[in-house]
Length: 375
Image (cartoon, rainbow, N blue to C red):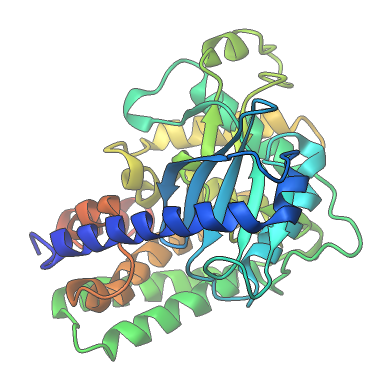
């Protein structure tokens, strides 16, 4: 497969959606007194919106309050994640639970009522930093990412936390992949070549379900989608790395921020770490593929950053299993999306249109079979 028919048309549709929403968002801000009060703006002040970015599920805008000089992020949900029916309230609750770590945006305002845009609106604090860029890694960038993840994972899950707790996160991922693959097979857009690859991946991933899910390890709020674009790293990341002690401990007191919390769960840290180093993750935002030695080095850095705040438990065994499942998750996501995107249906970003063919290529499938599934 060398191209996706209709990609340019879909890209244009996505841009039109953005334009419509910024106009609606400006009108929404004009009449929303509760939101204005939450961000310290008076009833007549003109608030300034600028497009910040769009993903598969949300539109984001910078929201400036001229009178205070404060900047926030206005986040409009377009498509909900699968295991809840109130996306913005779920994300707001997760950010409240994580606020003590200082590595995530602060929740400021929630609107999940009938007058909200899309499926609901969030206002969160604006976090500064440079997106992690695997094509242009600087000294210390990966150490900062390891520190950010460790600080988030070290947050204690309090009683009453609203974040979803799957009984076995690995099994839940596998079941999700099975459902996606069934949808693909029934879509009318099945490709025999892709089907053969994914069937072999599913057999290998199914064998990993024999690894044990220990309840004492499933006690961390994890993001589940540790994409590099979700990590905002300080411009001077090298200075953070230079201050790290050789025998372990913190790499940096201010390593940056971890943004985009639309799909967290209470689960195992192995899932987040495996997703971060997976080739299906790094390739999404770059041309970078983690060499095996660099994967080992990052895992070691992560545990140094944890610095004894929680036990390693069954991490190593489950890390290998989650590495398989992460690759399968990507393959089945693209399978399920194939029909909708080729037909020109749904919301598709420019990046998705550009990367889509490569994720279903034989070259990538062969690499996944070797590096993730041991085939």
